[in-house]
Image (tube, rainbow, N blue to C red):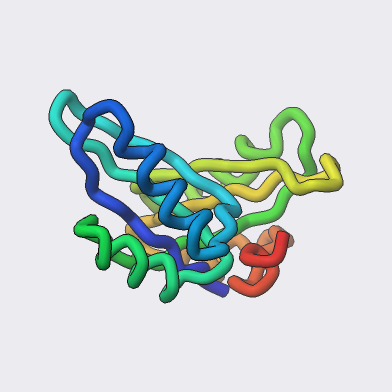
Length: 143
């Protein structure tokens, strides 16, 4: 039920993001989703890729600091209020969203919401009990 994500720490300077995407492309690694958070000096690039271990190795070999974390991928209909319904569900049991990002499935019918919660197990249980679809990692990597 959890999806492995890589986080890359990078200096906030021109060309660093292009360098990372080039390394992944050269290694035939497909980016499924990404989010960038930055400060004045550095950024954190969070990536869902189809070949997690290969991406980690390729980026580390080029000197990047890479970590792995587990996130949850929730599939919802791509319509007004989809995100609000998920957030309402987890808010009712007092969970905190550490961060999230989203992308639309190729069909355009569903959105995939990527979440990191302060209690991942409780989040999965609550979302499933309330009828939300939690995607397996292989489903996300192959979207």
